[in-house]
Every structure is written in C-alpha cells, then in structure tokens.
Image 1 (cartoon, rainbow, N blue to C red):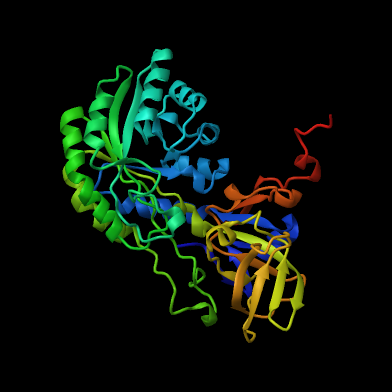
Image 2: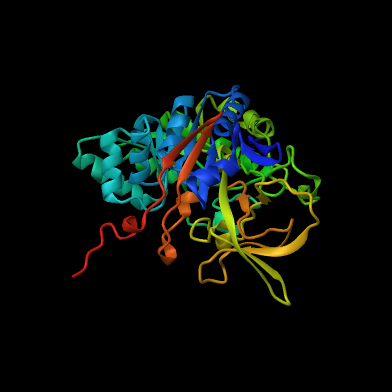
Length: 428
C-alpha cells in the first residue's frame, strides 16, 4: 500500500529518515515515495491483465512533472483536464496520443492545442462541446477523435462534492440520450468517434458501484460499437484509498481504529469489472489518480505553539489550509503522526494552522500523543489533491516537493521565495 513506516523510532519514507528531510528542506514540505507509486501502478496493471487495457493516470491528482515522468516510464497514459496538464505531460516525456481530455468547459484554445498535439480522444460532455470541437477541427483541417462521457445515474456512495455519476451532476450525457447524440456526432464531418467514457465519482471503497456502472452501460457500448466501430470504452477512475489508520503497517496499536476504512483491492476491483468488460471486445481505459499517488505522499509540518483553553487544546502547526485544503473543503481526513515514534498517553486536541480562518484545521478532537513546539509531524495520505490544490492565500509561499526513491532524495520543486510571490505583478 505504501512505503512509510517507523524504523529505529523515526518515520521513514522508503530508506530515508523524514526527520533528516525536515531538517534539510524545512517545513512545511511535501514528500512522495517513488516506490509506492510504481508499486500501485504495477499492482493495478497486473490485476487488469485479462483485459486489453491502458491505465491513464488522472493528472489532476498530482501533476508534478517528476511524478508524471515516473508513470510515463511505467507505461501509463494520462487523463487530462486542461491545456496546462497536457503541457506538463509532454514536458515529462508522456505522449499526447495516450492522453484523454476530460472536463465540461474546454476552451477553444485548449481544444486547438490538443488537436495540434495529436490527442488520443476528447471525452465530450455536451452537444455544444461536440459542435465546438467539430468547428475547430474543420478550421485546422484536422479530424478530432471523440468519445461521449455517458452519465449512468449510479450512486457512488461517496462525498457529494466528488460524486459525478448521478443525473443531477453537471457531468456527461444521460444514458437515455447517448445513442442520439452519437448519431449527431457521426453526422459531423470533422469528428471521428473513437470510444465511449464514463466516470461515477471519486474515493469509492467498494466494487459494487463500478460493477453497476459497467453493467448499465454494457448494452449501450455494444450498440455504439456496432454502429460506429469504436475502439475503446473508458470506465473512468475513482478507486479509493485508506485515509484512516493509514500507517497500519508497523504502526503503534493506538492508531488502529474499529472504523478504519478498508481500501478496495485492485484484485477485487478487477474481479467486479472483468465479467462485464471482457465480452465487449474493446480496449478498456482506466483513469485512476488518487489510487496511484494518494498514499504515496505526506505533508511534513512543525509544531509552533500549543495553546490550552478551558474548552480544548490547540496544536498550532506551520502548515495551513492553503497548503492542504481537503479537511477545510470537504472534511477530508488525514492521519497525523509524529516523526518520532511515541507511546505516551493520548489526549484530544485540534491540529490547526496559522491562517486567519476558522476553517484552517487538519483535525478536531483528535487523540494524539503529547506534542510540543519544535516537534515534527506528518499528515499522511497527502499525495493526491494536496499540492495541486494549494494556493498563496495569506501570501504564503508554495511548498517544496521532494521525491524519495530508495535512499535517494530529490528536490522536484523548490520552495517559493517571497520574491516569487510578486513575480508578474507591477506597481502603476
């Protein structure tokens, strides 16, 4: 699952002591495990071996070019949602003809750029988008490869902000209208119908919703294959990871929780999908993001103050909601552990940041060992939707990103300086 564990009393990432990383690069800092990313990709790839398949990593989860390059070398394709993400993939050594372009609001400039670079397919979300892609392709004297994103109206049983497969969501074209929209696409002279796509949501921890979506779409996929000779069916992404009790391997017993999430295994995921997908006779695309990188990253932070009031104890750290917004945005849980292993009695505390917002917290009433100013902690499972969603709110510089590969420590993004904060600005 991941390569973070206590060794000799301190938390290590692969063969590297994270106390030494914190001392060398300062905090807050993001640290990623290259071995974990490779392991996750290879495990999923093996599980899907019964299918002719391509794993297209969802770049939005973590878009550092070193992470993208690592996955490109493993044979990954990429699921992108902007021209900037395509640019990153190309700079990292990825190929446009192994990229699918998703998103409900693709601009004229983005579509033109992707066409010129030779994108594998646009995942189209509306009739209006089909018309725009056709017009742009015609103006460039090109043929645009497209797949419709079909919304199967499946409840992914996940957080409402990351559910995408219900009819009330903004994504995709309804199952009842898809055949007619495909017929309209077939009549457009500058489009090539290449496939069909769906995606029901994110952080899904059981196989049933994936199986339901595949089964609901199987008849439509067969019909579209027969009528339009498509090449692929993309089932999207959404495989969830463990956030609670994330350091189960080699961790002290107090981290174990009866409410701990059970990560869906690649084998269970494949077993749920292969029976419906194999008979289609198509290439199957998968678009995981969080599954590949989520548990592969931690956010290192340093305790600044411990403030005790009659109501509670606040442990104030140097990272903030602008660095990792998931807890503030949709109550995302991240396990918090000290870098130095502790077996001291636990006490409830709020772990909060320095930003002037009541929403600037990482945990409330969390049972943790005593922490003192200067202690280093790690927020686990921060490899997905961490740095990529960070900002300069409160004029706080963006953090460094560090990649650990075995015993090698690589700085893959330097910390922003104060001068970097105003780069591009000017006084009138």
